[in-house]
Length: 339
Image 1 (tube, one colour):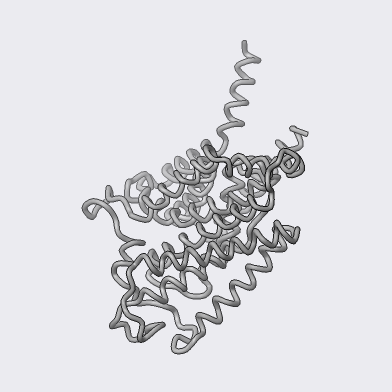
Image 2 (cartoon, rainbow, N blue to C red):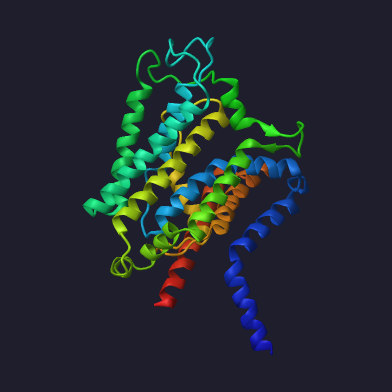
């Protein structure tokens, strides 16, 4: 009985390690400073993690196919600048487009998401039709997108000045909340992230595209032989990922009240790290929405919690790096055990 119990305990720890790590992190910080266990703190962590969660969910599409998308952060920056440049107040003295009339909020948002989708589609086309490794393909588009964004950002009369003076309606999207002002109010941006997570869960678990995605990541040759149009599916997957980065860029601009061409820098690495820590296999074919969101929350707790208790930011980087290495090592061991 004891051996069976030990085996069951080991299996439980193996399957739920990510959630245990999150709980231990929260309790550890709370022991140091009990004020951390407050509704306001939870809301702030969720608020800061919402756009990161959307980016991570987009990155997960590509990772599950066995690829990687390095262009995510620069797409976030591009779409943040695009949306912000078209949604400034009329009386702001340094408008990006001085003669642009007030646009309906939805128009710039849709245009920005469409821009992200197009970049993702280009990534998918390069990977699927030209057989360029995803790392190289998205590295190239990452540099191109940053260049395009910087040229746009440097146009007259803006000339590389930070874009500010966003319309109240746009800023409210990123900072507003449902309910009376207080710790129990729910930010709009958190609700949007939850809705996005639900739709991604549906795609992962209830659609043919989701099944094909896991099949491609598990064994691309077997997926091809079984009749899956790998190229077409990859293009759709990369396009969805790009659209999610676009949405995250719009929300990030609204949340922070502005944008520059350097927005989103290194966000792709945080997204990939959150996915890997959340159980998305670096070899492809494995990953769950719940694990991805938990991975994002772990890094959210690290960033917010360690700052909350006054830990040097450089130590935070070391801790994050150690967690990433441990998660990848754990993933590789599981992969080798299966083989």
